[in-house]
Amino acid sequence: MPVNLISLLGLDSLLERFRANLHESAMAAEDRVDLAHLEWQQHKSSLKTLTVLAIVLGALTVVVLIVLTLAVLVQFWDSQHRTLVAWLLAGGWVLIWALGLWRLLSAVQQLSSPFRLTRHELKSDWNALKEKI
Image (cartoon, rainbow, N blue to C red; front, top):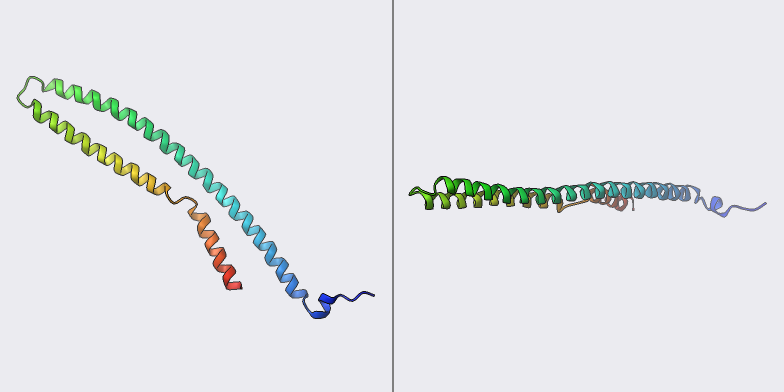
């Protein structure tokens, strides 16, 4: 009759806890990989949307500003306020451009921290693991 050395030394519970922790860690790692994949898909979709919107907005802005410029300058061409109107138009465009740049930079800043949930989960997992050890 063979003697089970692990049982004889009383290491059954330690081995069982180790197996349970290993199984739990494997499941947690799989969940984190799934979360990272979902966040990557969302981040990629946001980048595509941002790119398309930036291109469309840029093209529309150019067309609108050219047409608006011509319309306003034609309206005031024969008046003494022609120079003032031209400078007011230029100042307005600079203001609109600055607001657009501000909005674009805020969108880029929002995209500059991808995988926030995954990093948070991995950090909390690491802290929990350190506490167990």
